[in-house]
Length: 473
Image (cartoon, rainbow, N blue to C red; front, side):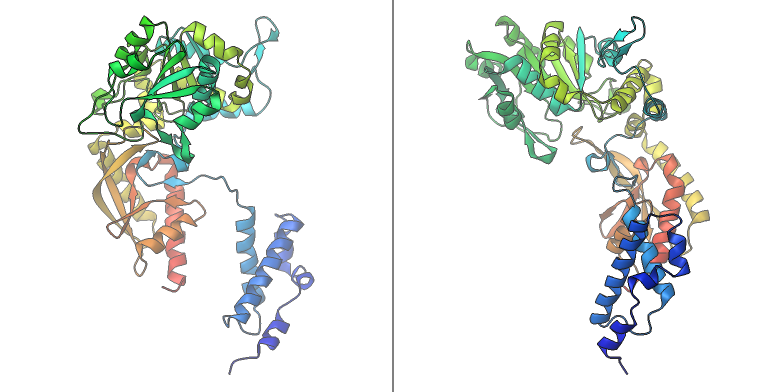
């Protein structure tokens, strides 16, 4: 016989009474009073809602209430920005923080963050220095540029360049290169904000050298080429190369700037990855200024790197917008360390996670998958069924839009649970695991699972299986 609602509601304990329970007093040893109080109120509100909907009856079990409070405390005190395991196979995953840093980068960031640093202090002279000096020499050494500057991301690098070099003047861009990047930021909008006037030439699929030549006037301040790194136009196409653009610009004494997007310092062609010229090669082709990201193909922290002619970079260094766009000390420490690794390309390929994942052969991935599966089967619940399958990874991060890398996938099955329920349970785990659902299968791509992910992956899989076993289908 069901109990009257008013009787059930009267049995729900008051907040002050719950705070006197021994289990709740123990929570106060590791959490603040306001956190515990918030969790208690949330738990009691949930019980009232369950009573009204018919899901809860009397008497109210104190241990069940304490467990709800424990769960709410874990949710309330968990950091919003936290590590996840990337099983998507997208190497430079924009939503998951793009490129993971190398161990030496992490050590450098930790060292600089623990105390004071030489951010803007010259030890030789004992006077104020400049933060940009820490990396300018390295960028010049690795790209062959005369001068360099770094800001907080590549979009900032582009808007600073346009503001410093072309405000109040015309900038000529191919219509097929008026890209939109993540977050709906568009080249025309950036151009407008900088004070420069956009002049579109050519068509979406074909732009010729004479299109630029015909559009040039006394008001032309810059020729801009934008790398279409996050999409590809195929078929009946034509574009004006950097070398052709440089010839046109230099004949009229107009600088040529390239927004290279991801930016690559090592030729990846020997590893079967083509179509992404190095920054040094752009300079050799005649580009006067190149901007690119630090946290994509470079494999470092978020940063916008500017490399080019001394006269142009000096104008940007003097522009007041630079202070608003400047790079912070932690990103600077990570970027300096990453750039130093590139002095030895083989060392960079072996220690920078993004490069290592990009250049792993199908055999390497398959062998690694076999090792992971053996370890996982020894530690996972018997409910979890692992099956190796062939698949493809992607570069991500606005680089190599057509590139598909053969990989090994792990299909995760838990009896009675759909791929969607497995996906949700793993996203809610203590260490969230992000995979993909394909052909009605929940899959994890071995290529993007890092070595240090293994303990957390095993725990999260076991926790998800236990949770799904208790949850109604």
